Structure formats: C-alpha cells, structure tokens
Length: 312
Image (cartoon, rainbow, N blue to C red; front, top):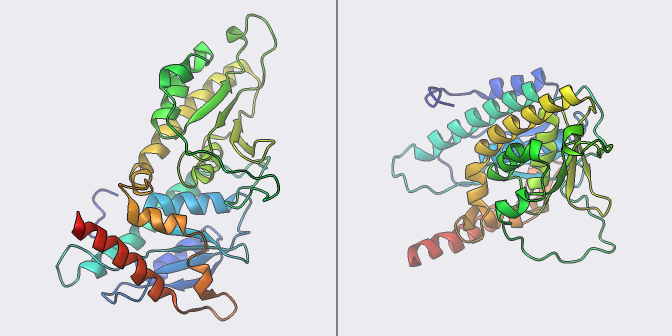
C-alpha cells in the first residue's frame, strides 16, 4: 500500500482485475464522487471457484468494505462511508478513489496466494449453521495464553502463540509430530479455533487455511473451525507449521484495523453494519439491479453514530 496512495484506479482497471482472475462481477457501481447517497459497491459471483466466498469476505474486511451474502449466493461488497471529519471539498471523492485502489490491491494479493490445488473438506458461508438445535453461545472471553500453551505440544508452542497473537483464538491442537508423543501414533496435525471470537473470523480461518495450504472444515456440531495439515510426513509437517505461523501473522496484521472496528464499543459504527446481516440485500433487487430505500437506513445508522460521538 505504501507509495501508492496517490494512484487512481479506473473503473476499467477494476473490471480488468476481475476478468483476469475469472471472477464474474454481476453488478458494479463505481463511484468516485462527493455525492453522499451514491454508494460504491460490486456484486461478485458466489460460484467463481470453491472457497471464493470466504476469500471475498476476508478481502472486504482487510479493505474495510462491508461484505454480505445475497439470497442468490452471490456476494456484495460495498463501501458505506458518507461523512468525514475531513473538511476538504474533495475528501469523500479521494477516500472512495483510494478505497477502490485498496480493494483491488487486496484482491490481487489474496488471489496470488490462494491455493486452489486441492478440494477443501468444507466450503464456507456465514450462514452455515443449521437453525435446528442452535443455542445461544455466551460472549467469548479471551483465554489466558499460558492456559492455552499449557495444553499444547512442545514443538508447536511458538506457532500456537503466533496464531493467538494474530487474532485467531485456538481451542485445542495436535502437532502430528512423533517426537511430541513418545512413540505413540499421534493424531493428525490440526488446530481447532473459536469461530465466534469476532465477527466472521470463520471466513478468515478458511482463507488462512487455503493461503497456508491446510484443509479447513467445520466441527461436527456445526461450529468451531478445524484446520488440518495435508501431510503426515514429519519433515513436511515441520515446514507446514512454519508456513502456517507465518501466514497467520501476516493475515492477522492485515485484519488488525477490522478487528478493532467490530468491537461493540470502540468500533460501534462498523460493528452496527456487521451486525445488520443482509442490510444491503433487503433493499437490492438482483433481477433488476436496483437499490432503493437503502439510503434511509444509512441515514439512521449515521444519525445514531454521529449523535453518540457528539455526546462523548
């Protein structure tokens, strides 16, 4: 991103990027203006390739756009910011222009790194859970890292520490390495993660797995995410763990600002959008490619947020 903030990406360049990666864009509203009510968005084909939805959500969160799964299975990414503290007459135009540049950079980066050479055990979608038998899960609390590491195989303590520092909260794991199990046949190398640690971390876990060359799947009960190494060869496993930790550190850094913005208090504005599942899709007709009534919803969120800020 450094050194490129003054560049401007054109609508044609955005379209060319999606064409290059063979990602169908169903609708594209390319906006670089100061009009508050004209919202930049793009709707991407949800069946572009297996695992693409998780990648689209991760890219959106890295870029601070809002991702939603539409009823058709397609994914919309939109940029709802309409008011800025910056009083420059072209402030909103500049912010929107840069947001497209940032989005295309992150798309290019994830597409380059993503592994499509194997079929993941499961495919991600943020409404994956079945309503039957679903129960309310208490708000997650951070687990002290010493408690986590006390149950971790010695060979992978540093990697598990790196995962947790990067914002990927682990629940249990197995190194899969024989030296950690005194001659007993170990379980396959895996890590089980808390998939409700913050909003849509499950998507980022699926992306993390595929960037690191691991296999992601849902837990048997429909929540928690498990990532498995694709080898049981000890030498290859050590490399797989090393790669896993490095990718997690890099991806976690890219998602740092997003994580802060979905905290209920500190990041209320963005938190509100991410809590409003389907906000965009309630006002968008996919058949006619028309968006109506959405601006009134945005104004309500703006009014509530900016009033709260003034009171503080």
